Length: 452
Image 1 (tube, rainbow, N blue to C red):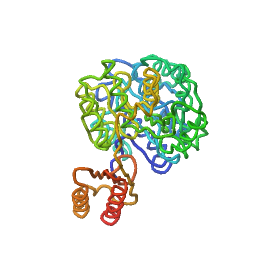
Image 2 (cartoon, rainbow, N blue to C red):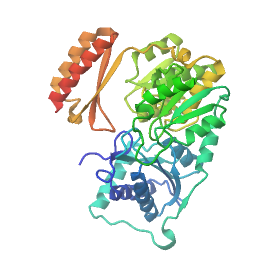
Image 3 (tube, one colour):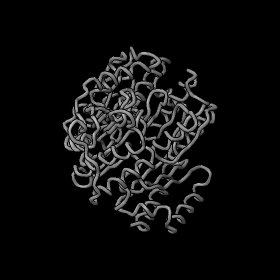
Image 4 (cartoon, rainbow, N blue to C red):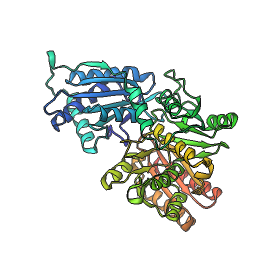
């Protein structure tokens, strides 16, 4: 059996890969590992548990709550809220642990478990490894001390989470959004109530799509992975901009008034310049991943902003930010971290800050996003291959070297195995879109033959 934890928690098909037994066992293991680490020392431990609207989240939430309570942890159940809301509440309520049930942008049959440490920060890799080891030990029959009587955890609903989180979002905005018309696509996910409420309270006129979750429609032809409906709605309603979230609302993509996409790189560029103007861009630096468009790097150089790049994954962006005191970082996919106000990517906060910049400057989003020119970039996801051999295949390495020679200094190639899905991502950037597409397709064919 491979490692359970990927780059963003544990994910799989709910009730097949991610079972109630696994959810319960991991929760017990997490409680034990954090107790051994001294997190619960001197007080009765408390956990915050939230979820997105997936149908499977209902039974998985019950399993997680049962596991934590059986290990002596009191549980505050906050219901359907975005991942960043669970992280925020974990911190502001002084909880020892946060648990979010979501598979983010994945299709509805999937689900996932993500743990947060005290303060709302993602668990360190070392703690995840220990949780997995402890889970496997328990699953093999190793006994553990079970609290009884008053020692078992108590469970209660925490209904104030929604209002507390929305108030936090409004409270950190640099200015109001009065006069803006914004379309919000909630992906029928965790931000379906939160995001429209926050934008409305901030003064925007809000039109919603994708905000009627029924447990089955999350991410289905909507949200940040399917922008067509948002584009159409923005143009139809004559809106100033549109905002799209994914299932757990830790990311945000945008659409300008003409229906053109504004991706995570462009959002980062706009926010970097805004924060510098407000003296909030610490060390005049923004953090991004190696997947960022070359146009973003060139724009930051031209504007005099330092760029630090990390491996792909918002956790690596966050690690770099925390280690060096940077305030802004993110990914092309729309995970944007504003560390002064959030401990993880926050799609609603990102959308609000982007809209605030439009409102403050009086400039259209398209004009603001024009600070960078996106070079043609083609991404192909190759499924049904052995993603563990990406770095060891000589045939694949030779193909990548040949592609890099062909592209020269005007492009680049990036191959990586997904940390959240069973696939290999092939990314090619070039000055010409047709060349990028051709090279990407050639490499994708090599991935299939070399790793299939």
